[in-house]
Image (tube, rainbow, N blue to C red):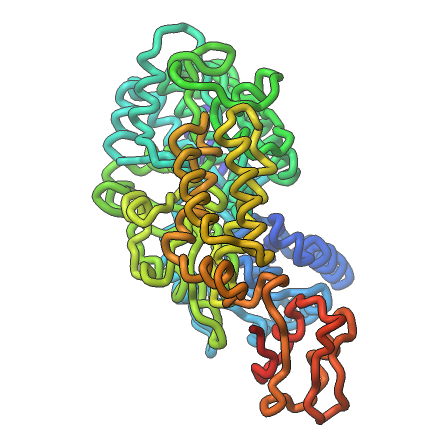
Length: 618
């Protein structure tokens, strides 16, 4: 089948899927949706449609995550009037109302309507593009997530899919690399190394056998960008991998994905099968004479395998441990052959660049940080989810506009970027442009795109301890600076949070962190001190309160706090008593309560439950 025939077939399939005369229901069933009950909602729709003899007349499809994770379960409904309504917080109990009201009677269920996606206006319901969570986003990587059925290759092709690969195969490999370089694409999985240079080095390396690898080993706490993309649009990533293979002269590629992502793995396996059936993988791809195959390698979940040399060792069947460089993978990588490794997002962007051109992509972002970047927005923020922004957008816009801020009763404190490998960006830099250069200036990195927001109830010493708990456990132990450094940092932070900190501990933390940055073998050890060093730099007063006053200002470290109830503010509503897991709150209804200090476990449940700010901590 020619590419033209494939495109024509795909367009017909897509038009049937989008047909305005046929009702349609889309349910977001990515991992975030499933956690909220999306599969039960799908079954409820199937049962209701069957009950009403509408199963054959209505298209019911499962799609990926559209990024609005805070509003799950998300369901888009289109009746025959072509108006598409996105509903939020859908439960199985709501399904009969949606089918009866919206599909049968044409009456949208306004109380649960989040936005109008397409079609006529609806009183009281904003357009999707006008939602604060959406209006500042530019979706290139996420262009198909929540829009297409990820099991249908026709949907991807109809929306421009594989036109980038077709264009690349008509160009010389060097011209493809030049296009990527002209776009200014930088790696989206680490420090932002120029992708064009990386491809060029692998291309120029001597050898007939070469490899390309997609690094989908996403392991940062609070990060879910790669998983969501693979679940919602695996084809864009695989298209980028084939383009990379052609550009450097490789005939084999690997997708290294952690086994804890079963849905992502299933979507990848399905996509590879569809690509092979349609002549987009295997021998003589699109009649170009180019042969290419892709193998999925499931990792066991070791964080260190996100480092490229450890990743390659894992693919080879060896223990996932990094090695010193040089030689770099571009010269001697997988099985000793020249190898290029890019992460999931980088490859999806490469496919988009070949589809629409370098100048188009370079039109987004800043002078040195081109294009867009996805972030997993999580933590103490009202609207958590997956976002994609043009690089250079102020941090304040992300936190306050897209994320909705930290809530009326709280105060923004900091953002931890790139999880355990990044650093804390304090409130004083809230207007910081988010790009590679500006994040580096304040001691953090962009990394793969984790973004955890913290408010005044977050203890920065405890935050640093939490991330060190993770990196200490995930260190492979091969090099002394990382193996011993993470242990000592964690030990000292634990001492401080438990009230045993001393003045000398601050200098010890700085000295150990500096040594790790300079002497560790790989990126895990080199970046592990970042949360510690940045919290000391910007929140030293909190460290000193823990050490000198034996007090946790945020009221988090249990050994250093005591809860009490302000009798003047307490209304005796009993809400705090109901929330206490150990029954340590006494007092009759409508009478000010008290906390029994001898049995209080200092969990903070009472403080979180109280709506009158009557529970205090000191």
